[in-house]
Image (cartoon, rainbow, N blue to C red):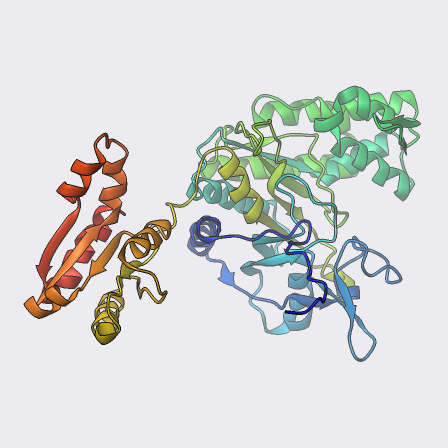
Length: 489
């Protein structure tokens, strides 16, 4: 031992350790959603975790502040690289780099870890998993409709019925048309309006009205400068955001009264009408996807339709307090992102599932998206002299597709059984000297034991009855264990 200071064992804020149950939940979501993408004809693509900082886009920090918003480092050639912020910017770089050899439109899906150097919160991590699908090379609004239909089918595959989430659709073209009619022409003022509208769910109309005007003083005393709109212009924006509710056709009719007559507004209305038609023909009803004018999406690169999904489930944190997870998926059309590299416009649209946040939210809502993580069958180790028998039994089970391990600690029988129970093992295999001599094997059905133990009132009788314990010929080990594993699946 030395007197050197010991580091505190702690995980960085926003970085979460996930054990088997959490990993299983995310894997289940990924597998089910990716199966949907493949049914729609999208191909898999995997890009690297690091991109050059200038390739990640203008929505990320300035080059002189490379660690604001992203985690960055400098390469040995003094170029700044950053861990990818999402899976879309790397796709834009890949498409620009390989455009001539790609099928067009290029339809790809991707899964992977992304990193954001932001303040963490409930369900908001600094390292998390996304699952994206994008179509690059099609300007048709039906491409947006297909992405939305896939998102709805993906949520169903992840275990969310209609009504458990809200998939909301809007168009940046409508917002731009609105600002044209309101006389907002300065780019910085447009962004301020978008940011104000994006806070509607949290602040309500009165709070947004302040942010559209001179600004707002929050509960902490901090002042947020507003967009500086005149009162009439601010009311026009609020009328636009209040046009939601009812069928998609009804919302479009109300929106036409607010933004119709501006070139970009009319174009956005036509796009949403085409999306509505395609969704209807694909069987995506009003209960699954709605037009909601208040949806903005935060990233600046969206150019057309935008979509966002939020859970409608009641959720609580570890202290039992209500918690809101916010968006669990979103996307939209970004026709200018590839052009950053090529100078040529390339239409594109996509949707991203926030897999880690969705899994955390479903856990908080008491809706697991995967069966409980089950441990391996544990082969109990009694005697060093028989270790070869134990490893032979484990190998047989593994060869038959059954997860198995030999206990390699130094404890006795009872602690080994406790170990198997803590691993949520379906069964324990017992090969003592008597069993080996007689060509038999004893198998403890731990799944059944856990089930029956909940009603135990007499521990002595319980031990005497040995519930869930069976004996079989050694040659029938695999069949006997398989029956237990499948029965408890």
